[in-house]
Amino acid sequence: MTLIAIAESERQYDERLLQRLQANREELAERIARATPRDGTVEPLEGLVLARLSSPSTPLPSVAEPSFCVIAQGRKEVFVEHSRYEYDPFHYLLATVELPRFSRVIEASPERPYLSLTLRLEPSQVTAVLLSAGYVPRRSSARALDVSPLDERLLDAVVRLVRLLDTPEEAPVLMPLVTQEIIYRLLVGEQGRRLCHLALRGGMPSEIASAVSYLRRHLSEPLRVERLARELGMSVSSLHHHFKAVTGLSPLQYLKQLRLQEARHLMLNDGLDATSAAFRVGYQDVSHFNRDYRNLFGLPPARDMQRLRQELESLAVSKD
Image (tube, rainbow, N blue to C red):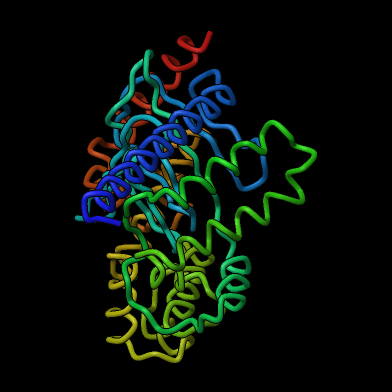
């Protein structure tokens, strides 16, 4: 075969690959749009969350679960402390440790709504795939959240996962298999080291995961870093270093953001006032709580609640 013929063959292959990628992106968007006829989120299969939004959003706080996130249409940005991550239909986001974050949709319209998919990742699933593939989880201080290009094989597996919405009777059998393939594709991709955070009892990531779990269980209690480090078998300096390397936050910063987000949830959903919410999550000084709250959310508690309730009312009216 001549060089010209080889070059032509490669060009045709690239064209077919691009066409297949585009067809998969279009199918993914069409299926998610069909499953989410209105703005909001749905969980049609356990562990699979679909979202739709018809306009850009304001930054909203949340705690990122270990998950694999794909956008079919639109764009989104995520903030963890001082780091910003943006992704779109050509990139995916992987989170491997529960992280306080802010996120907002930055590209969406009624004609082309934001459409996305989130697949929750269970540590046991990840560990099983790692072991089946012959990988030994190693210590890793890779940041627990990042964005990478979405390649054709990973996208193809995602589309096959969403196709199961049309055959829910097959989902109990096929969804675990497709999920295993997605985990494997992530493992052999550029985020493989990060995925090892989810391996059970596998080096430093499991110690940081234990620290995260401890802080969430003892949300309202005073933080004694020395005690936490001792329980994990680490020095205080080592705990700080590895915790910040993985989460981007110190243990104290992480706990503060968890407390403030929980207080916001209590005020918005349970009707607590700022003072009650502050004491419930472990603050002893209400003025300190108000200052921290405004620094994180941009408004004092009362004004933030007023704004959030107005946004929720507007969303309810638009759905009607």
